[in-house]
Image 1 (cartoon, rainbow, N blue to C red):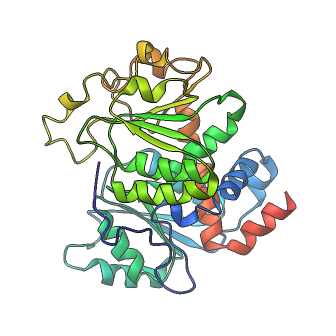
Image 2: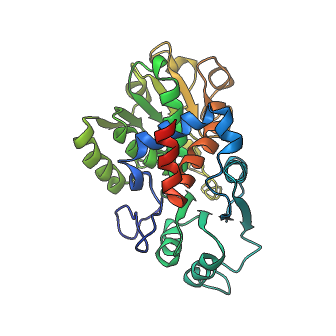
Image 3: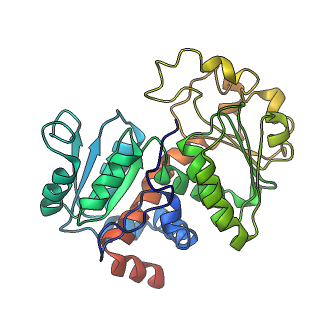
Length: 330
């Protein structure tokens, strides 16, 4: 799903003294350490039960869209870190209805210590972050999905011994791809994406990614040929062709003929490639059962890692001192 960024640039800090995560390049420099932290705590049974850096903190999550992985992973992650998770559905609050986003941000900042926001328009999460005095995390907008990218890259790091080749994306140039490209090059991974003509990623996002790639030495390439993108790939990633909120675009699906990730396509990749999908999957459309259920698939590792990656992000944004203490001691 594509959207517009009113500034065309990443917005890391809304108000002085707090840090937001609206796109993955807001933490590009810290990303390797954030992922390492997440992997450590995932395998640290003692810390999972005893380390409570969010104790006494309330984390509110606003949802304009239905959610399975995002809602459960945030609620469980906050609870494991000792915080109080508060879920606010769009029908529960006055956000954007009888109360402006700016006023809602100011009010919630008086109650909460962090706000996560799963919304339709990226401009809305920007507006919330601008007026909130507590950290704001973009839990998905039409332009970016930074928490998904953090989980994806964590999964790739965990399976690094199997990854022999670049990351290949096949499908729509959507919000998931946007943060994947930025995050991948920040971690030093080469990436090639294949999209149908007219469904390429936002060029402003790619420009930001290229600036990071110049520093890390990673490469970015785009094509309209799925076979070219996956040739020799160590990772193959796809997403639904028609995103939530695009159901009215009846003709869109036809543009993706030939972009299904199936056994014929993956035969061009490294034999030990990882198959990735952010879920939910539309089986039989963007991917076949044979691929998503194969031994190469790590889609449920990705889903689990949403929680661990977000736990690292939450601790870093809400209690940076505790984040550093755990990193140094472990």
